[in-house]
Length: 116
Image 1 (cartoon, rainbow, N blue to C red):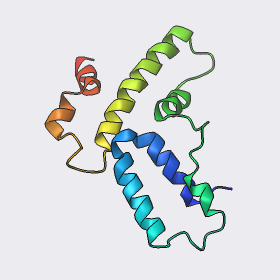
Image 2 (image 1 turned 90 degrees about the vertical axis):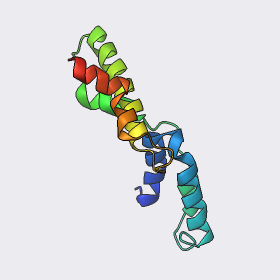
Image 3 (image 1 turned 45 degrees about the vertical axis):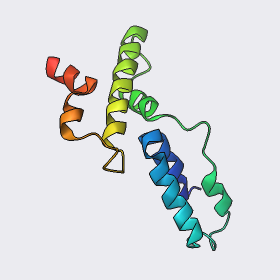
Image 4 (image 1 turned 60 degrees about the vertical axis):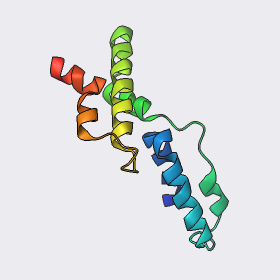
């Protein structure tokens, strides 16, 4: 059974490196404030699950079927990688590091959607 502490590695896996410093600062502050001192097995919180699928893999699995043509699955994988990079840019927590709307509109994902 996983409690809410298991969400942090999932957030990190989804939002990527760009928000790692924000996440780390807030984790350290929470530990310093004693937020988890009474939680059982709190050391499990810091374990990043090595077999946790990436955001792109989750999207690919959710939108693919076993009977999909392998070449179609490869195209979908490439598109989800582009989408994943775009979503990570949008999800950067610190506003000074996050691209503004004009920059996001120039992203490969947006450009592909406009071309279709």
